[in-house]
Length: 261
Image (cartoon, rainbow, N blue to C red; front, side, top):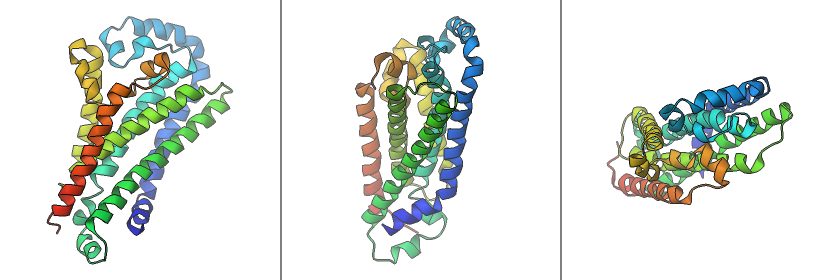
């Protein structure tokens, strides 16, 4: 597992920056909740009259007067967008960095198969994503304890699972794309994550575009669905996990045939 360990080691600064940035931002929002709680009724009334804007972000079905509702919007947007970007950036650079940094020839001289390289690379990507989510969850729990509120365990763990699966899906797709790249693919990764986010907004606004929920991983991270139903929508998760697996399979096929310089 030498490659796996090296990948984790080389990414430790990035992991620390992204994990703490997202975790502390969410913690800051939670710590603000007691001061804003008395104003939440007015906020609910304001959002209820904003039509498509409210529907776009699923805020028409949430109660901002509760911590879980407040977290679903504030924490959900931070972890959703930040986590998606982090997963995309980490995965899109996984297989092309050796060529970009001119270390591919050195790596290939060692008695290690390309299949082993791919396996350890994608395991490192998924492990890095798990580390980020563990840090974020820790920051969230600590902030809730600090404001002396009851921890909404079921909803919180469902939120974390949904965002973890979302990040895995984006990472799997970007990992497959990474096998085709030789230089920087950051724009592609961030662009893909952004596109998925806007697909979900469009699906929330228009009933005719609800089919996009089966394409975008943000479809099963809707805070309103998780709070109101107490479960994740498996009909959206299954297509997402299939796309993730297809991306990983493509990475194996392409990288094993790739002319690496």
